[in-house]
Image (tube, rainbow, N blue to C red; front, side):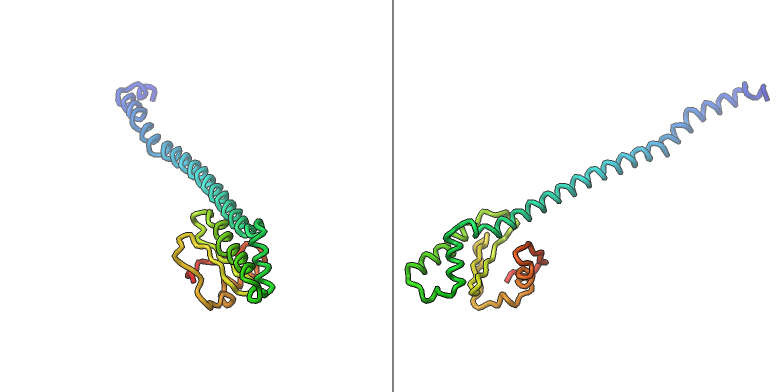
Length: 174
């Protein structure tokens, strides 16, 4: 057995194993495992970063919606006009009062709501007397006469939210 360790065949076989088999095993098993582990860790970090960015974007979007919701309260003229329309005295008022009310609701209110995010396509304000005020970013659409907003499911969801944000699924813009 001793003599067998020093033969040329044994030395060549050992050299073959060291020069060929060990690198093949490394290339075949160790390096793929290493890269798979690295890719998995990198994917996890990237996914985490994407989710955090999306969460921040949603928070910003909700903050913008909340700002739009309270924006009419910041302007005394708009609030007075809405209160005046709610008392159902608009038809009995003099022309100057009607002018001030219409100017606040048809000019001031849209100006307040026009600088919103690009993904907020428009705002819809329905006063207690049923009058509709639309602010649309593309200024193509307007309110439809005698449209029954109160019968729409999105309107019912918004009223049920009672001043809070209501998530309404995608629907045809009517």
